[in-house]
Image: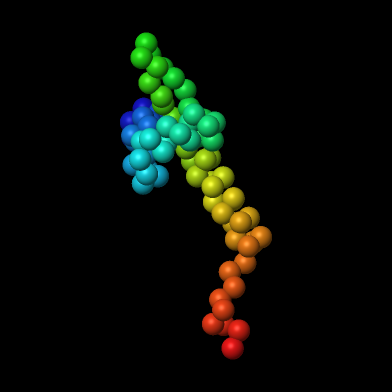
Length: 78
């Protein structure tokens, strides 16, 4: 199975999301981003497909927010 690995480290996820590993850890611990613990040291791993689902959900939530909170440009009312 060549190419992209099935499971990503929190550092890998942080790189994809352009954020910190601490922020990704917080997402995992709050249950917002599904992950598993593996090995004796309990290292977190996020499945690539779960990360893509998370990203898609964030887009959906952003679209909903924009629809519910339309941008009103005060200069456009002239």
